[in-house]
Amino acid sequence: MTSFELELDEKSRAGAEFMARVIDEIRRAVAAEKTRRKLTQQAIAEKIGTSRAVVNRQIGGLENLTARRIGELLWAIGWEPHFEARPIPEGNNEIIRPTATAPRQPANENRGARASALGGNTNRDGDHEQRSAAQLAYA
Image (cartoon, rainbow, N blue to C red):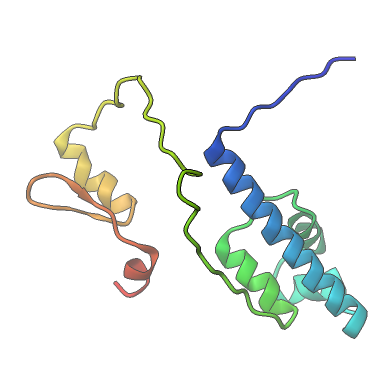
């Protein structure tokens, strides 16, 4: 029998652990509503306009969830998401600089199109200015 060991870097591990906590919380909320109101995955799917199979995969953690879908799933069951960011204790998030060279920058003439596609602007020096999701929502 073949086996392998998967190594995750610290960034990937942090992201995976966060999403696992989110999925666990969604499962807990769905289970509570299933018990309380006899809520089904079919009812959730109809409320958010998708199939029961998609809801099953998303609640089961087999499909990537966007922040929007998390909000939609919780809304469909009568819950609201709550997010809280906290600083990582000092020394637990050391940045390790790679020794490889930086990736090649695109030519200046492509920066405007690339910046626009990424939701940002190109300033008069040709540098990309990234905009946050909140800035994009109110643009």
